[in-house]
Image 1 (tube, rainbow, N blue to C red):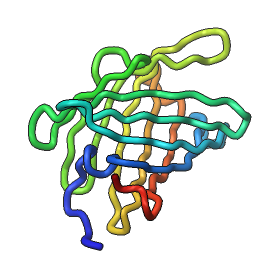
Image 2 (image 1 turned 120 degrees about the vertical axis):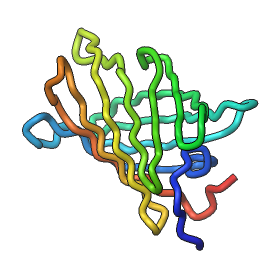
Image 3 (image 1 turned 180 degrees about the vertical axis):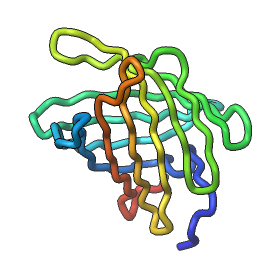
Image 4 (image 1 turned 180 degrees about the horizontal axis):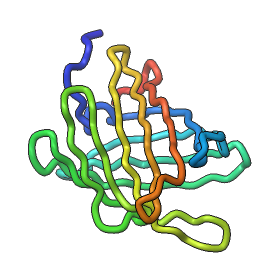
Length: 154
């Protein structure tokens, strides 16, 4: 397998990808564990990422992203629970992805700012560290490890 030199969201996530992750509070205490399955496909010029989350407490959720490459190394994305557009920029095998998400917490919904830093390793595993902020203050972190099953490409 050739080692990737550049991260392209539409290439890495095309087909089926699996991931595991944790949610930490602002003090670093693990609050939740989860797994996610992602199926990526093209619809015209847009790339669709269908994410299905399964949390250790039995909760499930989904998010369907529509991602467009707006310039070399620059992306925009939208989803039903994202306020406005997500913005992404790649630099080699790294990508920064920022967005504001409507996140249900108990009986309320909070608007949380996400700052994802993705790192594509040479073995095809991608690590994503997402800091969550409210009113500019860090309220937590999500760490996710993505991998592709052996037969998952298209």
